[in-house]
Length: 498
Ligand SMILES: Cc1ncc(COP(=O)(O)O)c(C=O)c1O
Image (cartoon, rainbow, N blue to C red; front, side, top):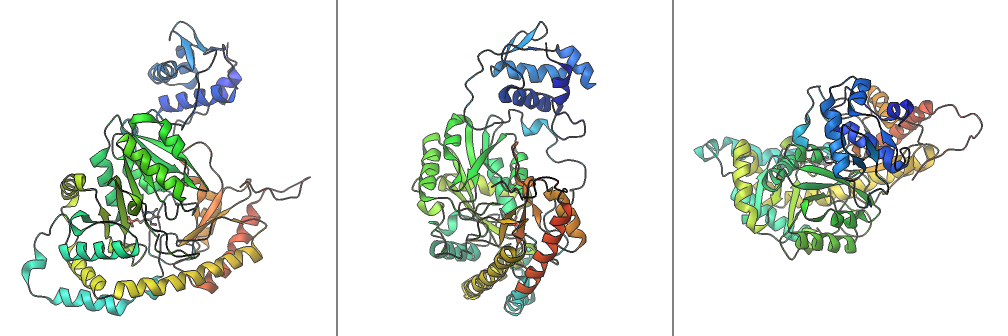
């Protein structure tokens, strides 16, 4: 029979948003897979376990039923349950079996400091997802907005097309074809309120209760949140230095309906998906009749070689839903983004988009159409590439010269942020909490993980701050990390896991 110590070692948190049955299930599953619970070992009765955890018996019964159905346990619930001998052949990705619909996806508590996006403006160093607002072409943009705001025609004051203002869709299609190798026409481009809405629409359009949605692990938390509003199951799939592990996707079989990926600049690790992985992913979608959401949030900015083309550009079978945003290239408060939708899904997406909030503000759409078609947008992008390269270089240099004892650099080839790994004894969330008190806003890497293994590190945005601010930020941040290291007694060497 299982020792009391082992039951106590099953992680169980009454305050967690993860349902009790899911916690019990994954606690026992992990104990079995790690060998802490050996084959043939007898488990306590569901009744005694429920008493020990001071909960009702139902969640324990549900967890045991699931472990039985997956072959980890044998016997009969209620009359003796044992760890299976031999264990089932466990391969492939870890797929949580509980449905988001059964758990409180959105907690009632306000978001904690480490969960928040860069709310509250754009001040402070290291904010992620913030472009160079100090270089924003205010005058040119204000001119187009002013002109349309002063327009006395009533056309701008009524209801707009749910798919978006056609000249803007046209201008975006032209830009995407030439700059991102996205094959599309205006009819497939939908205007949305930022990428966040595009992800929500994709999930609502394509995910049913039986579907599994694959997300990169580590990955973008707000993508997981948007997907979690749909009734499917989220499967975190590991990312390595070539991008998402496609073999794990393949092993999930036919339930996997959708994969969310950031191929040009993986969020948060920064790797670019290799050509072979891209082909494998496209082939997976075609074979499984599944869909891929490509989030190209900052793929325009690449510092070694030219920008990588999009995954959608390689897609011969119309399986890729391409999502882009003006948040990272103009400013986030604009709340305008776009989605290129496969032909067969266009009407479904428009209907859902319309059901959410009818259409995006027309004045900004019209102004943006002018901003793009007059060439101001591409000029701005071109000059920003040089600004970001200089900022990235300054940040990398500061990290290498004054922080390499505590912050190890990850990939720095693209985008508006980079990742640094911390010594494993440093809690990145604590670093972030304290950094915010000093006006610095890095994000904790560990919170980007949805699976069990999280690494500790910091995401440092460099788009929004000049070179001097970044260098002094590194100085202050690395000093802060040093104060949070546990005192080392015998072994004084730094251990950074990579
Ligand atoms: C991975 C990722 N996707 C998308 C976005 C932009 O989101 P939105 O267009 O909703 O502002 C960001 C911003 O930081 C991001 O990091």
